[in-house]
Image (cartoon, rainbow, N blue to C red; front, side, top):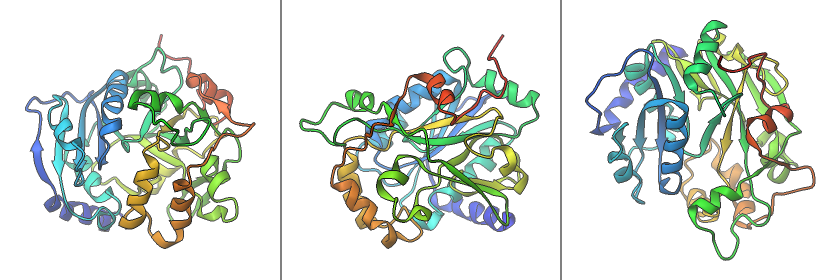
Amino acid sequence: MRWRLLARAFRSRRDLSVVVEPGHTLGRDAILAFAVVRNESERLAHWLDHHRRLGVARFHVVDNGSDDGSAEFLAAQPDVALWTTQASYRGSRFGRDWTNWLLTRHGAGHWCLTLDADELLTFPHDDRADLHDLVAELDRRQAPALGALMVDLYPRGPLCPDPMPEAGQALQRLEWFDAGNYRTRIMAPVRNRWVQGGVRDRAFFADRPRRAPTLNKLPLMRWRRGYAYVNSTHSALPPRLNDAWDGPGDPRLSGTLLHTKFLPTIIRKSRSERSRDQHFSDPAAYRHYYDAVIANPDLWHPQSRRLDGWKSLAEAGIMSPGGWNGPG
């Protein structure tokens, strides 16, 4: 399977047209980020600044047909290498063929962070540690990757209030998360973990829990030639990479991906994505989910936890310092 995925990735390079590549070369200690985006102009400035502060030196981004100014904004950033494509997102295995190619071409030997534009990495001690501190600890432990739970953030009140807040205020409203109901299974044949739970499981998939979104990811990895992501960053090959983290409750060092999906514009985007049928392997089975989001629900409930830095996530048991006390 791995060599078939790598062959697909190699062929997919023909989908990509380079827009801009920074001319200066980077040292081996540079940390790189990789992403595929489409119409993410409301998030990109914050997403870039967040990961710059953590220590990302260069962003390798594929823009998949944005028409909201995302590509133009990215092309103007001095630390962004940008490619564009009009090819099918679903046909590229939801962008993984493109990122596997760019990771192989540009990421080999580097610690690489592979994200979506609605994901913000956080990890223990990130109030005083950066990614260089984190990967030094991972190297010390001979850990090939950092496991992370994707944690859906949501507001208290309807997803799209009236009046609609400004972009910065909209992000600030996303201050609640679910701490419980996470469950993990180990799947054959590649030993990938399958973690489900959280607010989408509770609010949208309570009657069909096996359909709930997969939340475990391996977003940060010291990339080697021959590696490949299989399904988003939920699983990777060779299979031993999937043993890096077992999900919430695993005492090893881990992080979270704060998922900013539930901005007010999700109502409009859900209408669009329901018609595009690009995001799920069985789109018809998820139309009820889009319909439920379009209904503009209030996802808050009495057991919701307020996000207050990395300690609130560690106290909830969904990420772990793993005995690491941070830099120094």
